[in-house]
Image: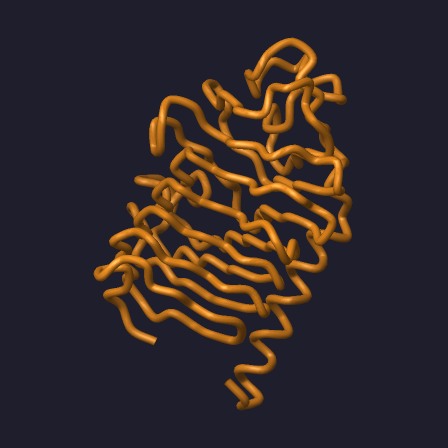
Length: 233
């Protein structure tokens, strides 16, 4: 989109995402995998408690995790930011028991990111719940690795209840590729919205349902399922 309103919208979202990155993704805890694959076991993290022990926290993955790269999310209430950084980071999978067997609650304005140095595919097998209530929230997924994708295998849905129902916005950004393998739905919110930025390719592999418009600002969108898109935009 080239109109001034569209440009301001793109600029605002880009600056918001950049602000999340500048906050420092290592602030809350870095995964060490000291004892096992359990996220809520604080002994596995560099901090005194696990990220998600309180709201607004960040989980960073930057190494091999002592071989524990398939994480059990049982007991995790929510987390705001998840960062996969550096060329030393292993390929991680968040969620055990199969696709959608567990749920990762991503807080409002949260960011899941892969930086340009990452040399391994990062996967989320857990379903992703957008925020802890049905009120408005945006959730950002950014991949700058040119050779390895960020793969979201589970369904992405708004919280089922709580708050004043509004729109749930999903922002996909970066020069690398992102795969959404599950369905997208509003949950208990009014609608779900998808925004595509950056030069990477977004692949929609589920029978997704978008309740409102999608917005496209860059890169490519690939439909890998005949019912991947039933919305407008």
